[in-house]
Amino acid sequence: MKGLLLKDAYQAWYYAKMVVVATVVMMGAGVISMMNGANFFIVYAGFLLGMMPMTLLAYDQTSNFNEYSAALPATKEQLVGCKYIVGLCGLVLAEVFAAAALGVAQLHWVAVDGALVISTLVQVGMTTLLSSTILLPLSYRFGYEKAKVGFYFIVGALAALMGFSVAANEDGIVRNLLPQSISSLGLLGIAVAALTLYALSWRLSVAWYGKAEQ
Image (cartoon, rainbow, N blue to C red; front, side, top):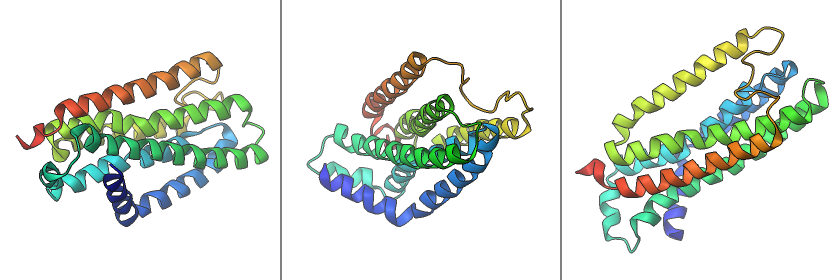
């Protein structure tokens, strides 16, 4: 398991460093957009980091690592679980970046209050886990190339939300994925639901592991 995680860490560093750079740039743009209470850039940056497990799985499938892994003393739960652990690491990194960006924004813009900060952090967590929750099972079942259709759909949906956010009028309609009026208990429920779906996604990926090669 440790060796699998080290392999993924090396690949993430070697192939996906620019994803982290793009995330930082998006977070910087998010600090400016938060002037009007619009958090889309910060939330979208989390989505970028959430694509890391999908990227690593694509390299595994194109290099036939899934076939070589049959000779390793590792269960399919461990092989699949590594990608989901990478996703959780991306979640932590996204939340750290988002907290830093929101801290800077809160120092400069009166529109950034505590409720917006908490709501944004929950939204970052949702979008970071979203891509892995949906796309990893599809990749294990149908292969990366077919699962990319789902990726393009998610990107298109988020791009549409970005367009709405930029065009939003002064009353803040569609500036955020979640309404600021939602209660703390509601936000907690959303966070728990996102993590639960992530765990169920792992179980589905384990069940479908190897199906794409059949």
